[in-house]
Structure formats: structure tokens, C-alpha cells
Image (cartoon, rainbow, N blue to C red; front, side, top):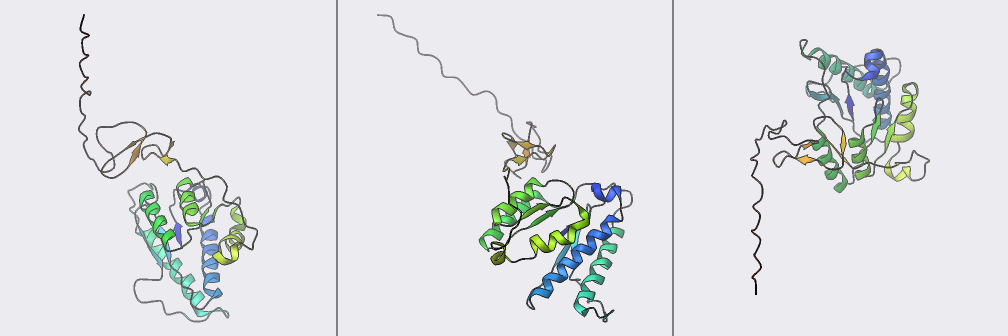
Length: 238
């Protein structure tokens, strides 16, 4: 799972305590996945505005946890590790830098979607803030599900109902439809969907207006002159 923990999101700026509820729902969803089958594994990545890193499993030595209130030790390990790693991720952010966009590269995400399709891996997306057209395309490519949650109060119920069932079980359940997917590209300058745009030949960034310098990879383009016109043949007089 990739969890967007950017504090610049609208629902976090309005009420920072909501992030705790979202995190609890994500942890419960991850533990439910582990509970389904013994061979199931879990990986959680926190996506912040300054870097992305694993929240679980921990790259170092795992925490020494004991059973608490009858809770399975693995579930306790998942909860403690994710919360501790997230606190460290938030503390490591630069204090003098304003939160920008989350470090989830669109081009890389789309490339991974095509790889996942060949390996028959479903990419599911649950949006709690705004519509994500690019990630919706990734869901459609891999056969996964895209859901814009109407209310954060029922987030855990939506996660368990829509995303927990395996691909073989989803066809037997009444799940939200995929709807119409807009495959237009978004420009890198204003994030607006385009029908016709300008593409950098080096990094493949898309722009809505022509620029002699790519703002992504800083490549300078050579602007050629107008195409030469062929001289008109004079008609011979007889």
C-alpha cells in the first residue's frame, strides 16, 4: 500500500486529527489482509512531500512487541511499526520548506502499471480528497478498482468491502463500477487535461504551451527557421 501522508492535503489542513483516523483504518485494512491467508504479506510506503520511505516492514531490526489485550503479535507489530515510522518521517521534513506536492511521479506510476498488467497484478486506488485521473487510468489498465470515498467516516468499511476481496471473488460481488476513464494527458505546468500538447523529446514531459526550455529536465530546444518553399514553375507560353 502507498499512503499519501502529505500534510498539504485539504482534509488534513481542515482537521489534522483526521489523519489519525485514516491511519487507523489503513492499519486495520492491512491486518485484515494478513488475516485472510497465512502466506499473505504486507508492505506500506509513506509518500510525503520531501521523500517516500517504507513504513512497514522496518528496514532495520523489527520492534520487540508482546501481546497486548489479546491482540495477535503480528498485528501489534504492524501497528507499532507504522506509527513509529510515520512519526519519524514527519519529523524528518525540512522545517523551512513549505509542503509541496507528494512525491508520486506520474510517469513512473504509469510505467509500473503496464508492468503490473503483464504480471496480472491489480492496482487499486482509494481517494479520500480529490479525483485522481492519472491513477484512475492505472486502475483501468491493470483491471483494478478506483473509488472516491464520499465520506471519511466510513473509510474502513469501504476498504474492506471494495478492496479486500481477491480478484477471483470480485466478479461475484456487487462493487462500484469503473465508470468512464479519461485518458487525456495532464500538462506538467498547470496539471490541466489536454487534447493537444507539446512533449519534450528527452523526458517526455507534456506542456500546454510551447517553451524553448523544458522546465523538467532543462533541455534547450533548437528552433529551426521556416520550411523552405519550392519555387513555382513558370508556365511556358506557346
